[in-house]
Length: 220
Image (cartoon, rainbow, N blue to C red; front, side):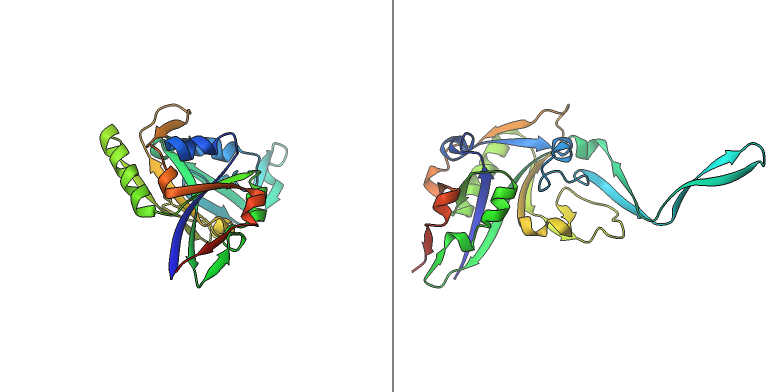
């Protein structure tokens, strides 16, 4: 049997409201790029194209010889292209797990505690009824008139540059994050967009880092 779970990593000061009221904040790509946390601060976030250029030289004109002389060289330069549509997007990220359950398994086999620590978070909310969660998302965004998209992130090799990126594509170096995203567009300015879809208490449970080591999932 396969169990599909959505797991939100976060701080103990924030996650209770996510579970009790369905409150969450959708951040801009700019805010993710600015993060100093290595798991969050991806400089490619929000780019619609990432180019890699080899054998790049910078030359300066020598007025005495009227020739250009090389003053700098790099064999790996990254160029990133951004547009207004993506800069007006807001995203919300979760960890997506597909777990084969035979009898009982430790929750620590599902959640990478080291990754949780790398994010500098101490709590998780685990949504176990994805169908109902999606229905509540759909209902909320239908009522607000905001078009949104949800889905898993596709991880691809950026080593030679990528054309035509979408908000659902990331460098393969982040594939361990197993990310699921919600995305909306058309938000002006740089501020986050707050959402409240209603209680998730009936389709989720919450635990801290220490409790992850003590919990089991059992399917019958």
